[in-house]
Length: 447
RNA sequence: GCCCCCAUGGUGUAGCGGUUAGCACGCGGGCCUUUCACGCCCGUAGCACGGGUUCGAGUCCCGUUGGGGGUACCA
Image (cartoon, rainbow, N blue to C red; front, side, top):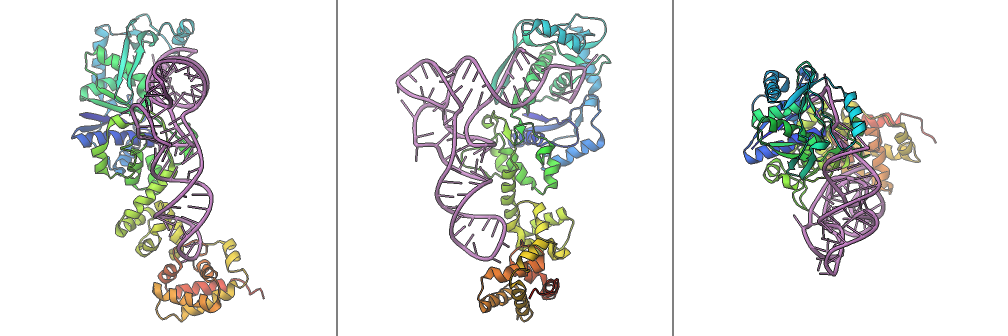
């Protein structure tokens, strides 16, 4: 079994493309087969080093590897020319100067009864000769057979007048030369498959097995794009998703193992993934479910591992203690800093929270009482802080919240933070007292 | 316009002729509780429509509608 992943080098690796890469990779790695990478760009207009490196980088992040050196389609011009000459000589293709407008005009008069056929000329673009009779059947591992009648097909242009070849021709030749046995790609290629099959046939080559994956859509049913949030692997990474979670989620988009299993590690995926259980329906990329899944993966990481990733993601160091008390509250790496930044950069500025909690009736008094208890606390570890603060609650005869929230706002600046005892303890006595003092001094007592 | 693909709750899916139509996300409620989360429990919501075939259809066939893709001297 030999497969290929052939991204268009536009820079961003779209999540749809990532899923295609993943499925190819799972198939190859699960069967001991081979996966090659080919950059699709017949004239090399888009495959700039930057674009190509971005694609490779995204694949590496997902831990999708390939065999051998990546092939650039544009480096195969000589071979493409040779195959083109072969078809021309055998009269499987011919030259024509007919333009898109000519084709349009032809179709306007003939409708569905006849595909476009041009008159052979001595110059112009090269068109493949589609037989007048018969049909080409695409045997698809996911969809079964799709039948395309030749009368409906136009003679497709396979090379420009300057001799450079077009995608549908190049891809067939490249797959043939590489000995690709399974072509797994997006459904947007299904309608063009007969052209590629016709090229293969004219070349006297065998057909690979095709499998066309359902397309991915945004929540509005339209094609997934930037405006739907993270539409590329790069954006997913920047948003703080874990590669293993993305892999698991992507695998579930259009594929399922049974009616109960949701979580698969990569080995299970490789072992269980099969084309015959791939869905035919287009799927909507649901970032809410990805978030949920990411949170689950996050919580399974060891503290060391999570800390390392968080430090890498935030560019900060010494995060371990904060990770320990905040890890259960985040779904993505991105959510970490807003929750714990106050430990390192001082309290957040949320005047509304201050007013509501500390400015409220008796807020200052309770905060002052808490300050006193904290100052006199025997130990300043988590249980020491807890004992001190709970003591205040008891003495004042109020709800725990009435004491904890003012302290929280004083040290964090907002009403949201990790556990209050853990947070105060981590901050340390001096800093905690200083922040409480700053809050108490913030505005004169309103009677 | 023409060609091709697709159709189970809001979303991803299970189902492969007889099920109280299952699971997960989301959403609603509850428990837990110092905030936010996590976790746990309960609940909400679905076979696009119309014809067939059959004793019996979400499951098979046809049509309609809807969605998507292709139709480039793009990939």
